[in-house]
Amino acid sequence: MAAALLSIVTYNWLFTGTVLGFLASAALVISAALPEPAAPAAPPAQGAYARAATGTRLFLAVPELRALLALNLAVAAAGAMVTVNPSSTCARSWDCRRVPCRWRSARTARGR
Image 1 (cartoon, rainbow, N blue to C red):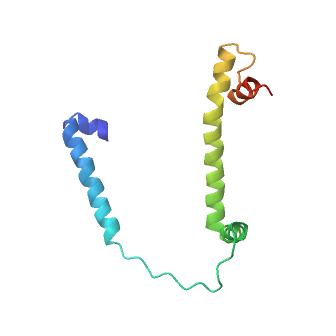
Image 2 (cartoon, one colour):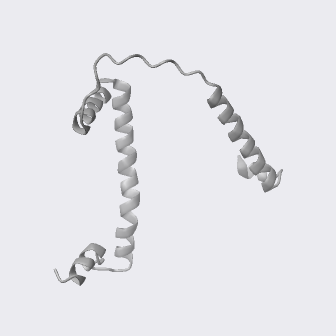
Image 3 (cartoon, helix red, strand yellow):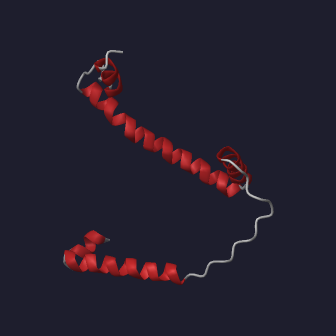
């Protein structure tokens, strides 16, 4: 859409329109009424492990949140592939047998 608009208007007007759109969006977000939170039935769990375990149980109890967790894991896996594959592809294309590891190099520089 931006490319089509750039054929009609200048960059400055396109940027101004984007700013106005963001300001309108912010005004709508600020004007939204939020419901009052319900009082907790039980006191919150103490400690980081207990809170994480409680949150995990709550997250896995709701089917929609389980689906969201599966989607997040799929996106994280794809992100990991995007992060890792370029280095191995470059190493293969440059015929590198072993890419030096900075951590290993730092350890050997200290004499360990």
